[in-house]
Image (cartoon, rainbow, N blue to C red; front, top):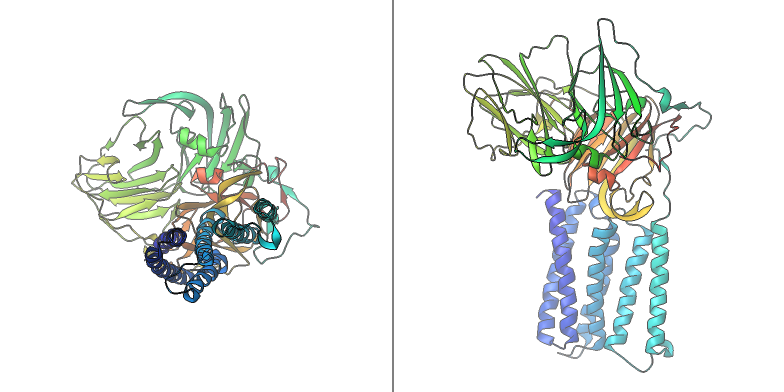
Length: 623
């Protein structure tokens, strides 16, 4: 059973436990002795099952059980033990008022455990513990007044006085807990390395710009992209209002050869919120990164910004706006970036982005072209680009092939495979290479929702094909990265502040953007990330400005080709270990590339020592 499945099983056990104990208390209050005893036995069994799921989850990592072990189970166990003992000492067959109170309180404790896990999330804080225990305690006291009414309550208080006092206690305790929960966090995490050296001279991201000239033998590749609203027609015939570059989606493809200088002038005609260009996966200088409020100001209508960087990194990449990207990318503000080697052996080279417009999947060409000619013996390269916020599954039918590159980086001796599925995370790219056979070939996405055909139609059911595990693919090579700093990112959902407002957010270590502490590094550091997904959603993780080496997944080391990625899917319950060398000075966004998740709080910054920004502060960066 995967950790994600265990998390679901534990949620189910927790909910059943809450229902069972609450139903036992209600049956006892109704003096339905036989039913109450039967439900009590079921409650005990479900609670033992819950202890089992928590014990197994604990073996997968403390992150998955912290609040359960420290709060949820102790609270439930104490109340359940008291309830059972009260029934044991009661006259045979009699359910006393105290037993009713304790059984109902056990139900409250079980519900509190569920709420803490689903609403507060990770990590367990003093504020969460205060709120949960006070609410359970006061609910139990109020139950005493309902189940065992008397003219005078504890200490001679009347019913009204007692309820007023109980309300004041819960309000005060809850307010204390809420205040503690929303207290500002530390602004910086050092990952075990040295802190800031205030004496070091600073450099602004505005001064960290790309090269101004091509390499010897290279050319200047100049582009102008104008962001504007337009009506776009899909191959299906549907039309919809879009945000476009030059009136088209995807935007114009940007191509270059290694050594060229890429110069792109971004203009904004009428996108009210502003636009930027982020070069996804391309390790540009920080001043070219397109992170609004950090590396530049957003380009508002009537303004422009010029990006320049040398094409010294071959491969398949893409560009998109990073200003309100959860809206802008979905509506069309993106395009492809391909940098080719000077000697490329592919006779047919196709760049095939996939994107979903208003529920309609478009693969390769917004004009509907899906058939290409390829003579037998032709060397073919297919560049698959996922521009959505969700993963897509691709399959190549009709020929054996190699995955020659992932996220623009070549793999070491990739082997030939066939009849396998390829999962591309949000923002991810795979390059496939094969020799065209005499029969037709097709690449499909999401089991036939979209396809591109070479040489004719191919009718193959690919839904049952196994997924290619890239961590076991290709030949290994020695890469040594001993960490100077180690950061752990636990991804979850919970109530926290996002942009200064309380929200049920996508969180990192219990916080939402911009309250997540910056990660501090020094140039030359070897940095390791442990990324843990406690949630039931997939989080494609993306660090700007640096590829990361995948070290392990769920404790199993990568054994294939060294796998350098800029976006990787952390599925529910997974734990990834990745590493990189800090060689690109700047202030870099580090976030989930499910762009709505980033907008909902799952975004932070990796900051180099002594690098500053004139464009705002950590409270003004927007994805």
